[in-house]
Image (tube, rainbow, N blue to C red):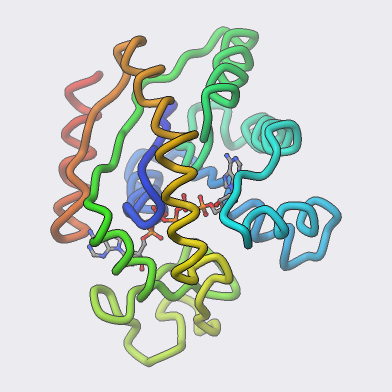
Length: 217
Ligand code: AP5
């Protein structure tokens, strides 16, 4: 299956993507995680991306699309993938359509994770991420690690993302409403969107997402 996850910052895209990808046996491709890996390896792409990410803005399309394309062309993505955080505006959605068309492929579903703004702000304020692997995500209240500051999965140090400050989160939400939300209509016109209530227990949200994907098959 080829799936896109969309939703505001803190909706739980990363949390759900990890679980869905495991259940569906497809790779989880997160452009945010790819940028963060470049930042920690101090690559030129990482240096460029960090300046945009810390300000809560989108990294320019040219570099983002090239990076996402490169990842989608890896052998493990031949049978499908779950995109988290890409596409993030209509030009990226059009670029993805073109790329899929050249390969004679198409998307199967777009899952739109909906959560109220005050809830996503609380989630982001308490989020802690593992330095070894940004797919290992915790929350100080909702999903706390067994030992404070230590990743349950690999023992890595947990930290708060630089772009999770209150001011940057407000900016990221504004960017989401102005630049990312329009892709929901773009995909609705292709009949691909399933809206998922992303509130309540994590397992329950996963169940709703899998149910929606079954309906689409
Ligand atoms: P990215 O890393 O994609 O961040 P985001 O979209 O802002 O989303 P988040 O990672 O903040 O939240 P999430 O929805 O994954 O929530 P999570 O599962 O962690 O992008 C970061 C930046 O990179 C962008 O601002 C941009 O600069 C750049 N970028 C990335 N892609 C780009 C692109 N395509 N084009 C241009 N620029 C790009 O959950 C949040 C917290 O809530 C966690 O603590 C979790 O434990 C908790 N939680 C999750 N679900 C629940 C639940 N059901 N109940 C209670 N708590 C929950």
